[in-house]
Length: 121
Image (cartoon, rainbow, N blue to C red; front, side):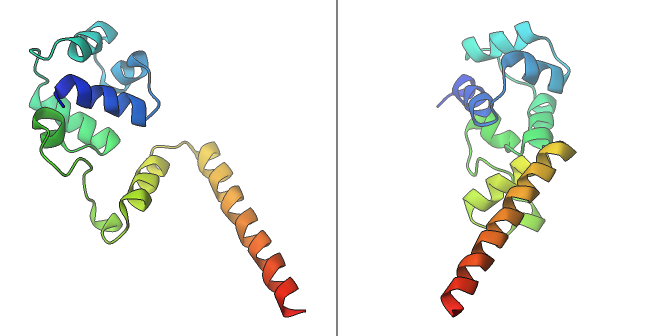
């Protein structure tokens, strides 16, 4: 997997368009397009660090493919990879999206309570 492939994966996993990524990083969409097409164009260390900060992908993974892919943060240590990815995605959500997730989680708690009450009777 080369740098182009890793950038494409970041777009895919975060459900981003090139235009959105460019806006988030403060660069032009045409530059993103070139990075996605030409493996000889190398991403700068500072831009890789910005992607790490915003999206959680390690700069060394972006630039060189060195594992691990995702930055391990102390508050996520000990969680499974799925849990870590979920938490990282939630950190990027706006307040409305977080409220929707919380409402869903609360509904699961309500359903579990209903089933546990039925088991007791």
